Image (cartoon, rainbow, N blue to C red; front, side):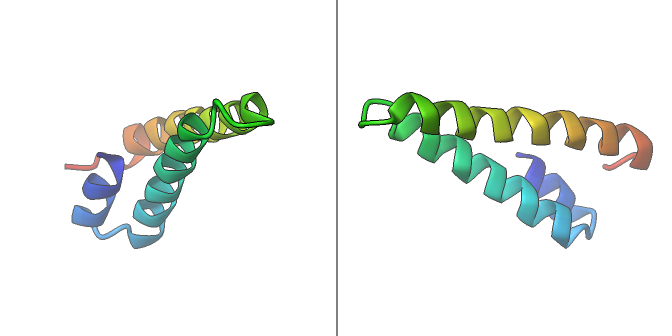
Length: 65
């Protein structure tokens, strides 16, 4: 969702980072049951949460549509 908003605003680098954070979160959740799954789940969700906080901060400063 953030990637679309950033892409529409012409922020290609932020859109790519948002997409990558979403994919890493999905991979972490999908591999949660595998050996060392708790580590990948933690890493994926942590990356997504950190990016969400950063993106929210950027959105309040840049006034995206």
